[in-house]
Image (cartoon, rainbow, N blue to C red):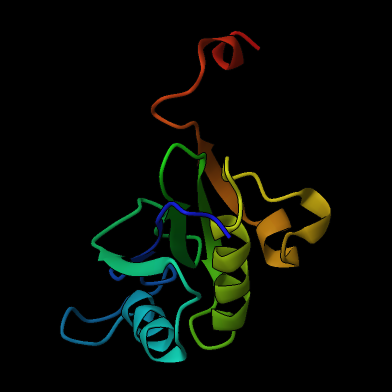
Length: 129
């Protein structure tokens, strides 16, 4: 198992492209709440964030930690995809570089990656590719 922390960031402001009154619980907040009660994989911390700027494309989450690639995923359904996120977070946590092999990624991760961001301390030879 990896010895570096993993954060699962959940945009709690996500509205899934819907008009939702400010005083109602948004889909992003519902997703965060579902994940909080589901029980996270060992080594994974759940963190609420105010906005990941993917507002019209479902709930959005990010996985990051240590000197690894950060991944942002969209089109998350708050009521039915917590298991997918928990599986993906565990797989991500077990990597040293953040790169989950394609064949083992949850199907939703294969089709709904919004962005991947290189690690802050990326080796120089990797930036020349």
